Length: 55
Figure: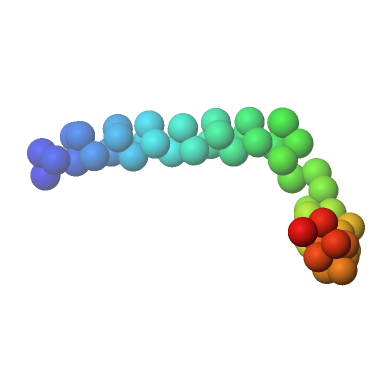
């Protein structure tokens, strides 16, 4: 039971670090355009025939 004296503060500290990182990511706009990244991979600017001409 003595180990709980160490584990509980460590767990709370790590939880606060995670919460701070999450709030920072919200504030910096990491979750603003979720659909843009998903659609960007579908609409590739380079066609495969353009790559073979460069070689």
